[in-house]
Image 1 (tube, rainbow, N blue to C red):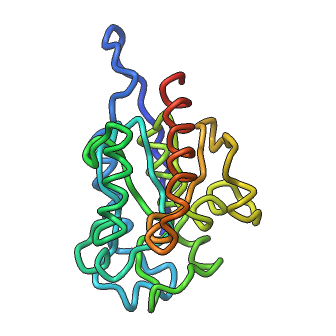
Image 2 (image 1 turned 135 degrees about the vertical axis):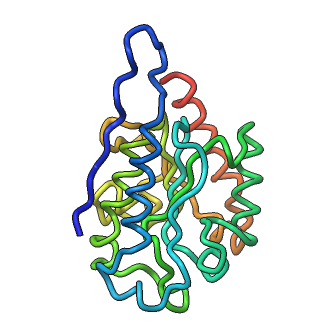
Length: 206
């Protein structure tokens, strides 16, 4: 199955709308490709694919690793306890879910919520790349090790990736903890907030 990488179209002269989203048909075709994908074995166990949610012209893009059981059931990323914590993180930044774009590296749930396998990431990553290319946000926030490593093509641990401003396809990117991890280790919420403030500073000055 071919995956088309859609680039943001230039606005008409005088429109002044550099943040105009791509045509709705582009998103529809990409979502249909995701919905019908059988590129890896995960498709056999899914209830539905989890495409992504939010604004197609968002200034912020948040990327997680893979859907969990509730996401698989509802077809939306970051729901349940981890989703409520992410919503709280967004609120602390003065943002709402509908204003940002949220997606995962994998669009199907791994069995038992296990870690994504390299072959699964390789099969699914082009979809995420297409989404980011279409949205073209001011800032990307990678939530957790798998999202950061996939987008940066690195095997460096999360501890080394945090605390710096990275770049993905010309877009600044900040790495922080996954909300599910923060539920297990609430003491690290202060460090995550420092990461988000760093991302806000970058987004404000882009």
